[in-house]
Image 1 (cartoon, rainbow, N blue to C red):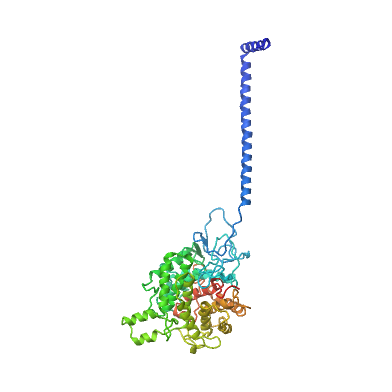
Image 2 (cartoon, one colour):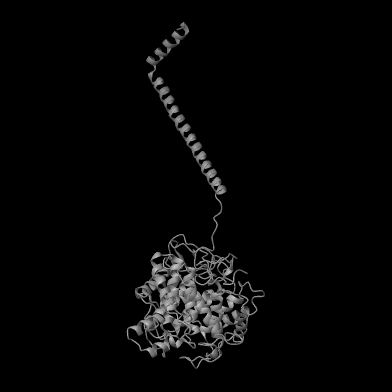
Length: 565
């Protein structure tokens, strides 16, 4: 060590001995400075890390937004069963989503009823005859089933109603479904004898002259189920229906599931879904069979396939034979059941001979629709059965587009019934003849179709002052027949000639007849309570409401049987 350095060290030692407080003060200042330096450096490093993290997250989000393609909405897909949604009309839209839970008022409709149409394409199709992936737009590629836009998230605005439908008709359908839900029995059925038990106040939905008999409950349950199935609602759907009249919420899928289960629990070993010896038995069998087939078609639930096929087999075995022994049409009683009763001594030969050849165009058409549904969902339907129905429809055809109820000799004649005081519309049988030809042969050039259409438009839907012109049955079948032959999706050149005026008259007639009460806890809201010519057979309002819902679903339920426009 140099002499100068040694001298400096000795000086520090002497200073420390003589002034120790000075050295202590200096040491403390050094320690404090070091601590403060460490704290400052740590703080600056933390700020630097936070900034880097924020940048990294921001860059990741931006990259994610770039790489992720926009979600495409399949508007022709059946709503997934696991997705919970609520059935609303096209015009309803949720515009406010609360940030915290609020008490829900189930007496109020959702959304803004004046919301503008965003022009989005609606789900199309439905179930049953000719429905396919293109639904009412008509792709020409028939498939067993497809779903219209029955419901979606309540936060999603509805699309444009199908061609011919209006927001008024869609609202009427929803109100009709609410009425049906309100009057369903706990066991899943709908019935004339139990209808009044669901009514409140002094305005029951059952007309005083109604015969409260359970003979038609299977058929009425099938008819009611078809109204829900036409919305694309099946046994597993999570769609909800809020009954704003009663302030209650229902699972639409459970409504259908309970109804189908009730029918299947009543199925006999021979496949019959109702008592085959009850009055007008084949009406109930056809409607119940159609409902079970459509429920299977939408859900593809394997447990439904076997009972649906058994019901179809019963219907096929019920078909009557013509004098040459070939398949023909149907009427009230099954040919197979009559044969079995004769063999067992339950009826004599004269009674058997009288009943075994009876056929009519009304029952035959309902059966054709049920069998067509069965075909489209992949069930086994003999070609001979459909061809026999077509042969009978052609046999029953008279002149100038008229069809007879039993034979061509009765074409244009008045058919009696419990509503004989109502106006009889001779075009009713013509519409039935059109549909059998449409769904079995698919021949757009068949001259009968044009002749029958001309006859129908001479007798448009209308409501007379005494209301005796009402005929829901005629309106349903004529609407369906004209929509197929001349509606917006028909490939027929110049289509709309008959359909446009008919559709306008229909809407002007059918919508005002629906009960539009806005009072709370009133069971009549949404139902059609005025009777028609045929309602005396089936309990008036139950039959009327279900069939009118079916009429207003014609716009999107059936793909055009003649192919795409």
